[in-house]
Image (cartoon, rainbow, N blue to C red; front, side, top):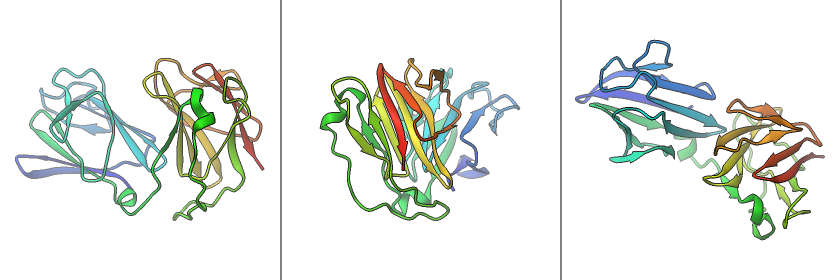
Length: 217
């Protein structure tokens, strides 16, 4: 399970397991990870967990958020990344990802016809039952008719920087959540937020003007 190890001047002051889909960090006491220091904004950053991946997003903080010495707005965290907020250093540990969990596959909605997903056999992961025969079928646009098999733990779809959603394999099926972009996806006409929503056979997703159908046989 991913975790954050918070330290200052080389002294570890707390270790936090990331168990929720959304974990907030900041100076205010209602945050999941509280760092009571004036260099830290009240609501400084948020970690969003999708499947086995964790994205860190800076919430327009006053002093910024740095990953491995580089200022970032939003970034996918890698095992052993070093996050700096003021004088505090936070080490991100995700041993499961380092042990070989599958990488996210990105498919642009307007170019799915040319995407070639890896057709390797599904991998059995601890705590995950293999869900066979599931796919996303493109219903509109130039890629209409194209199917993308959901063989990975996390599959992201959409246009990076415009609208991106993630479909995550869970023990009893799949869920979808909004990852980035002003234009949020819809599921059967209802807007999807950051909280994952369960997918059912025949559900219709719309993302960046492209309609897709979740198919599970």
